[in-house]
Length: 338
Image (cartoon, rainbow, N blue to C red; front, top):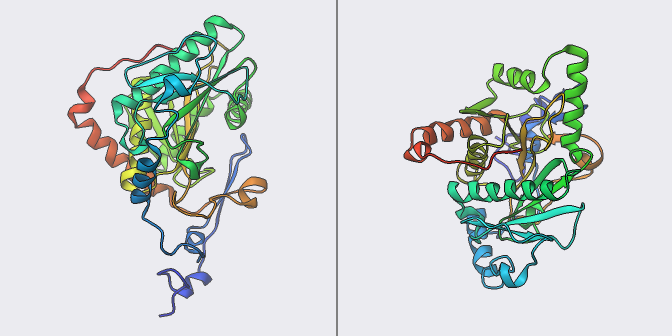
């Protein structure tokens, strides 16, 4: 049997390809699926460390010189004093995208080592940051967060950190697109966009629920292994499900680079209130010299080459195990938002 060079797939698979195009008529997103594209041969991959070893080595080599580990001396406070939790702390961002743009740092250096308590504390400090900003500037209404893990995913530092931004007018980028899609959908159908989106994916077996939060493997994904996580509020359940998604990437899919964007409900009540939303996806082999995006994704169409049932199936097993663990029975609280 003749194999495709650099893979374990027979050549005759090239003549039996099935390509799916999925379009969302309200968000205007368009995603093309062809799992065989993931088997394309590539150069420059020999001699690399496996991803887990690479991350361990990278974390160890950057630990002593890390600015964020030495945050009191190497980072500045915002215009207000630092907001500090048990496992996280705020810092000013010298290179801002908006009037209100801060950083929330963990107190642990290796991103793979973050446990649930530390992740919840990270986002609890973020909620306190948003409260503080809105108390100073009531025009700041729309909370946006971004989280890139490791340099291959776009992070400037190995040390875990998230960006917090608050805009007076709208959510950023794709979250604003989704909000506008929800508005148009409600206008034309009278139904709630997010509820129907969840129901469609639930009917297809592409959802996982953790109490008041739900994860969806969206058919119009931007990246491989993409997930939407939704909840009415930025709650313990919401951020716990986010943590379980990250653990799925790490331990079930062996992928350590990911990017996530979050939009929380606006600081003031509105006619069509947005839920708390995470959109996250993997960014490929973090030790690879190859980019995970090309002109196709930048200027044409989203291309996903993995089966969405794989990530949702792995997450489902992890959530079931979590719900049966003693960790899930521990009473936890988050700052109420807004």
